Image (cartoon, rainbow, N blue to C red):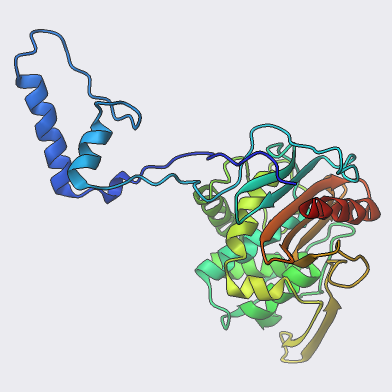
Length: 341
């Protein structure tokens, strides 16, 4: 069952594409309008897309260019859309289900509420790392990888440990290792703080304007937050990267890397995604491609997925703030089943 058609969230007109000749023509037209016999009444020529006479129309017609909406291919809904047939997500704080092929909103609950995203953050970490680094790049751990928070998921990195960016991405996305996220941020950004700045810059470029990152892993900080809608924007873009597409589908990851003395350290862990591990089964006709899990005390239980219907149409489903692991996965099954209705 399809929901309300998605509308554009924002429109960005790329005036930097206008040729110098077009600008000159615009100024000339304005000059003529002001210098011609108009008496003492000023003639306002605003830069408005909807005005019949405006600076925008003068420039556009002169240059024969079209201003494309920034969000023309994106889903968005300003109101909650919560079909009664989906009751398994009642306790979750925020939930969305978007059809990417026709930009339909099938389910939306508190899509723009700012919440702790936990390790869903790591999708953006991976996206930024791949934009500014390369897979074969060696990463050498510093003291930045030392995380002492109780219960934090770690792969056991120590200062001096060395692995490639490809290895670190696999460990971070499959096992959700927070120390691997710090390794990536510290080495690719030159410092963790600079990398986090890049995360925020890239998020804004994607239109994720209700997000602020304070770290690359998602462990709780007051100034670290996002929304289900912003996370959809990030996952939608990240899944267009072949490396991320492949990693998030892995059921387990095995590799070896070296410590500071050159001694080999082994890593072999299963994914944290319980759909991929076979602990839970998606609804009939729905294939879970992959995604990212996240759990902290502040965030609750979170999951975002990229899924395909039996006719190969893509969907993104996100649940934030579920009360339990079981509630998260049974709720996700109920949510994904809405695709079949």
